[in-house]
Length: 141
Image 1 (cartoon, rainbow, N blue to C red):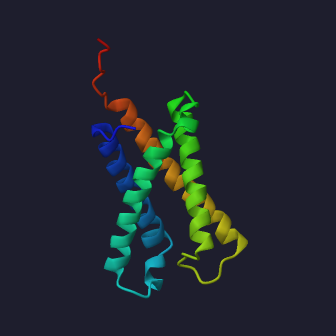
Image 2 (cartoon, rainbow, N blue to C red):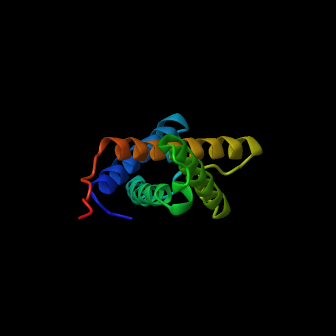
């Protein structure tokens, strides 16, 4: 795996897009930030770092050997997003990272669908920049 210009641009923009979706969903739509018991600046800072890690992880997953067997870039991106989103949902559910005190089955389903959607959009951003950014081809001499 090459950590080149394509990686850095895809990684950062994917992370920013996913963080923005997270912030709009939890901050404005659900208004969850009112329930945080510590400074909002800490929460947003830790969330930003977490999304940088997610962005890099999605790129690495997208470039992994098992997923490279999927030749269609978009299908691979969707599969990558579903895997990443469901994995993130499972981790956050297991360690009880939730802004809601009472988790119902409906809440868990909506959260799972949202997480998969958010990470799939992040993976599609990676796909778009993989297609747009052309890396120089090395000649075999």
